[in-house]
Amino acid sequence: MFEPVSITREIIGNGASLLLQGDGTGVLPPEVAAFEGKVQCVYVDPPFMTGGTFTRRRRFGQKGWKTGSPAPEYPAYDDRFASRQDYMAFLRGLLTNAHRLLSATGVMCLHLDWRASAYARVLCDEIFGEDRFLNEVIWAYESGGRAKRHFSRKHDVILIYAKSRKYRFDLTQVPLERGSVRRNHMRRQVDETGRVYRSIRSGGKEYRYYDDTPVYPGDVWTDISHLQQRDPERSGYATQKPLKLLDRLLRPVVKPGDIVCDLCCGSGTALAAAQALGCQVIGMDMSPEAVLITRSRLHLADMTIDCEDTPVAQLEGSYQPEDGVLLLTDFRAQHKSFPKTERAFDRLECWSAGYMLNGSMVTLQHFHRSPKHPELPLMCVLPENLPSLAVQTVDAAGRKTVFQWK
Ligand SMILES: C[S@@+](CC[C@H](N)C(=O)[O-])C[C@H]1O[C@@H](n2cnc3c(N)ncnc32)[C@H](O)[C@@H]1O
Image (cartoon, rainbow, N blue to C red; front, side):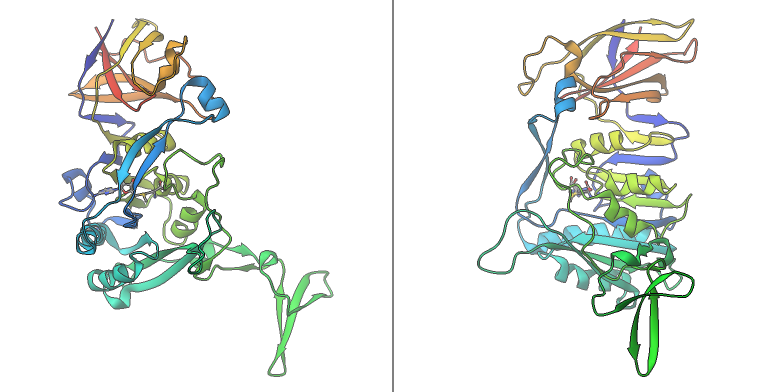
């Protein structure tokens, strides 16, 4: 039978990547500090000093995942600071850690908006050096809500700084189709080989721009939209950024095998984009909701994940060590946000199976719901005769319970 047990770490594969619930502003935990001077890119998307609080929308059960029906909101993080001084002290902590973590070729991206970007620019100059400034990227988007007493504030600011003169940045990694760039003032022509080009005359010389050659982004980006309410990429985390934005930021800077760190990872967009580019990742966030979502968005090969469990659930099932077959038969958990349901497993958001090792759980298989696969598998086959089977469940309110088979 299953009995609740406490763990401090979850280890998957060789555990090389890290995901920790913790404060990115203070003294870094030793497992993150071990990467000082080794990280190729640190992305920081902190709270923007909005004065608000933010939530995560959580879907419930098979139906909720299938239809995306209105879901209860759970607190995710607080963006209220007593004063600008407090906020700047918070940013200073993050930027100092980012600077420490970067390697000589590394690059830092700080994502903010109109509220704090001007103050942050001065702080970045101080911590990184004025001559390490690379860009102030303007990410302009259309989203609901229009101002009447001033122009609508519809852009974020991403400050990019290098750690040293040796920084790596290869713009050719982010080509755009020239076809998509407006050039009404140029004449469309076709050359002798049939290639389409636009031309312009200046100083008696003709300049040709072929439609099939790439152009590279400048520092104002208008071609990446904000995530829409029903965007399939949406995780329910209020301030989630689009993957396309992170892909464009990371691609010129990283190569497969590099280390990417996000000190305020939220729903894990930067880490997911980094993994897609073949990088090892380090993610930190204060919010347990953030760590949970990020876990569900990452490929879980080779991760160490910090664990804070709230043993609130009960689990029943059967396990045959000789053939490794594990079957879950019942799951019980109560929460005020749960609608009435006959289906016990609607209360289960995701689960994983593995074994206990020195107080940690080594995860071998992980199952979670997605809009495409709203139903959770309840059976899996593990290696035969595992020394001490462990199962981790996360209920639909985000509470984790780890069980050991006794
Ligand atoms: C703007 S959100 C990040 C969104 C993220 N980039 C995404 O795409 O989902 C800011 C995050 O900073 C986290 N945070 C706030 N204070 C923190 C701290 N001291 N250390 C680490 N994370 C913190 C919040 O919990 C929140 O998840």
